[in-house]
Image 1 (tube, protein in one colour):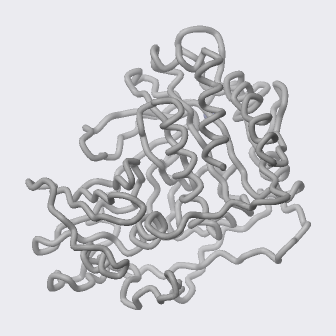
Image 2 (cartoon, rainbow, N blue to C red):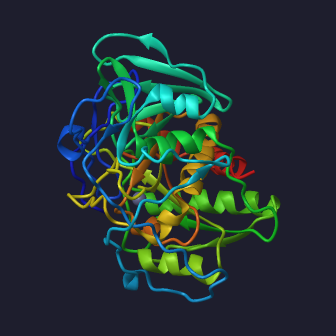
Length: 390
Ligand SMILES: [Zn+2]
């Protein structure tokens, strides 16, 4: 079992700060934008506020249909600066001054043809609402989380008020808000292969359930075994990283996905909040885009300049994570702890395909551990994933 560090909860709409720790030996720290990116001067309202220079490298896409299996440990971390990329959004170029900048929420909404943001709640940390065709977008000043279509999503930088107007960071706008209001990621319809990764195994037992002697590795394997036939029935070619109590390295799990040329990689885990036993709920993780701070950090490893192979799939990652998370919330009725970004998870960052890690509940909470111990809850988790992939 991993050692556990105390971490601080990111602030979510309507929720207080909490402390928790996950099964991935993690710590979490909210980022203070004033220490990580600073405006050089306050802009006029409805203009773009420049942030500190931060030039970032784009990941290099591997050759199409490459059959080479690359050992994750051999994959380099790219840190060299490169020119700005200029993505095209629905046929329109991303505005040239929306790079490493604070963008008025209203301007971003206008870019997407959305009506003006509506102030829902005032005070020191006001709450704004935007109506998009994919659902309501709720932006809270000072919160490292947005609520989109009723679901929490982590941001790298908390939105801020500049001269009384709400601003969002351009990278959060591009990598989270924009992706969520754009068209939905299309999963492959034929010859599709998914790798289901039951977390832990063998001597690596994962978190211990607080109500018995069972460990995380047992529950993740059962979840995976429930899920596989559901996906097979839906036409997926399912590959499991383990079907018994085998110990696998994180690199082994990535190599399996490379070997079978998986279209999607999904890692299944359960959480532990020790010593905080009050925490409950579902979390769904994908890799942090280059340039953004993570929502979950292990030790102090979170170099925002890093670009990993899986960063090629930033858009697909968050769309896939959101689909799965939303479906899992519906199937289980569990507490929404959000779609989050983490950079330290090696099982994600070396993937050459969309990849997501789900934490299916807290084994450290008595009530949730009791639910996780029932076959019915694990079946609900499996059905939530399967429906999310439809
Ligand atoms: Zn785990």
